[in-house]
Length: 173
Image (cartoon, helix red, strand yellow):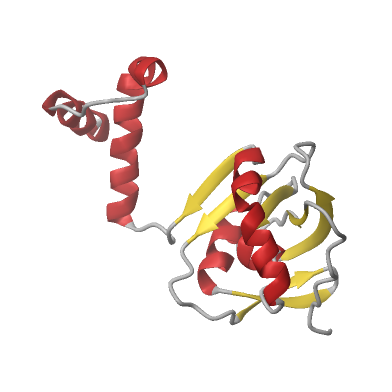
């Protein structure tokens, strides 16, 4: 199996989207396709923002039948996002932009505001969770549920001691 080679993008505001194929197991090899699309607001996709942490691409993903190298954190994010039965369309800068071609990379960076703003959702992936980070996210979710109406109305929320007590009660249930 050969190494994946990005095809040059056609002129104009265009970008690539990754379709992540489903798998029954989290440990199954990652398979995807990359497809060029117009950046005109007609595509449905999620944008993935993740921490590169100065990582080098050292993991393999099968893309259009060839090997595409990705970072450990990108692999973890894709494994976490991959469904069992449905495909997931994503824009990931490290994969969808040909990082080896300076001209393309510069042009795509100039389009990133539009790419992120046209995404259905922007997913932020820091790294795989652990007990402490999972507990922190549960706490934030509990606070969100308690203050959802205020957040929708004002866009702000102020966490109180009552929120912490509610979270402690939530944990003990």
